Length: 78
Image (tube, rainbow, N blue to C red; front, side):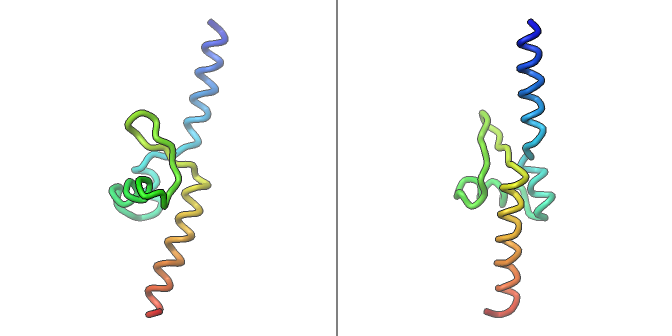
């Protein structure tokens, strides 16, 4: 019984490190559907657990920097 409790605690700790689509969208200041589209197209790495996506903060940081550079270059008229 104690082993199951430890496994659950480890699982929960691991899950806390991942963001939901909604949290990622809020941090990137985009719509939830945009984040889901990026996940489907592979532009943003994520893990699908059942019917829900989970996103690592490090993966989110990489897409955030890339999208920011893309927006900046479009704003320069290039």
